[in-house]
Amino acid sequence: MKKHIVSALSLALCLGLTAGSTVTVFAEDTKTIDSLKIAFSPYADSDTITTATEPLEDLLKETLLAKGYDVENVDMTVGTSYTAVGQALSAGSADIGFISGGNYVLFSDDCDVLLTALRYGINKDSDDPKDWNDGTIEENTDEMSTYYRSIILAGPSEKGQALLEKVNNGEELTWDDLNDATWAVMGPTSASGYIYPSLWLNEKFGKGISDLANAVESDSYTTSLARLASGQADVMVSYGHIRTKYAPEWKETFGGTDDMVNQTGVIGVTDKIYNDMIAYSKTSEVMQDEDFRQALGDSFIEIANTDEGKDIISVFSQVGYEWGDDSNYDGEREAQELLKSME
Image (cartoon, rainbow, N blue to C red):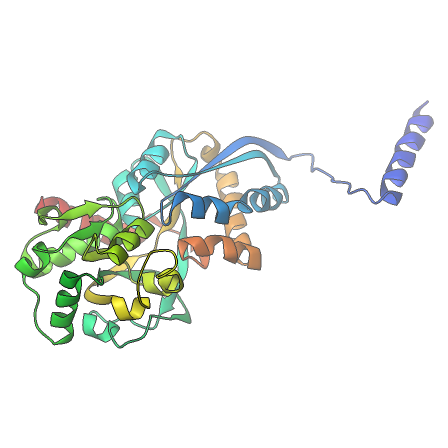
């Protein structure tokens, strides 16, 4: 009887192979993960991120399976705000989140760093805004960077252009100059969209974004760009490489009437900001497994080194990952404390 069973199994395997079937062999110690919940901060609009990250589900499942983890469902969502993603990590309703350093510091009691993002540095890194306004759009370099800067970008409105002209003429901006403008900003946990621009204002004028008469919060940087292009906002705050990323879409997508380099200019540059991260929830049951955290981190690093993976994470302006450390974000903590003291 035993010989018959072995023969039948051998025959079935042979038939499967001759039919061109793929036979997947699972390791005896493969662990099943029912669901992995990933939350993305709104670096771009929800539809753009959702479309760009769709292939990540299968890539992540395949890579983790090779490491002994069979993940049945990968649930990916885009947060309505940066704060919403931090709250999801805090509550454990998201297992991991793609978040900024500023957001991480706010919620670090309930989450921890898994990976720090890498990005290409850009060819402009001066803290003098005039150096950014040489008639060219910023370009990526081949150098990997663990930091970036926030910029205050003036748009094509009459007020925006007046501010830009003043800067390019070497004149100092006043608080009244800036307070008279309409600003497009991000939520208060965004490093480049709120925290560091507030610190820049504090250093120069003893004020913050909360003191501005006309600051309008956007749900994404693309919303801010649309407001800037239409003249609804005179200036916007963002990461320094935003023109590198969106200059090709300035007219068609955002409604600009000329090339972005001709309609925008930098009027302020902040201190360096440590890169965004992938953080994991301390309250998530699945993330309690240290071996799974290691496998997950390794998987993201490996995926980011493939052409398909690079295409996916480019929507976040990221080009790779390295293992992160909580202490790397002590500068963010200092920035948060200074911001609180200003309120």
